[in-house]
Image (cartoon, rainbow, N blue to C red):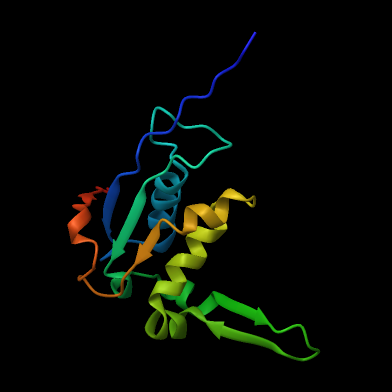
Length: 141
């Protein structure tokens, strides 16, 4: 008896507009598309997701409590070298990194996480360089 796994289809390109969206809701939808759970040929052990282009990353909306409480930490490995950066500062200086960290945390911690993140393209403004791929807009609400 032989079990066969269907070969995944060619990836599509999906455009997501982050303007006015909340970070968690956006990250859940994008992580689902990156994993390929929206496709009929989804399987746990292969990458079957699509490419996702996120535009307007600098125009996300956060609650005041979230801006005040959430902090990103980074440690170099040396004693006393823990650096903390609040979300309010990160959202202004590096809005693309805020989205990438949120999506990274929602993907499974295995070898496919890195492969899925290679299909993620984030831009702070509304212009992107993937117009030739003709991305299809994804409705979030």
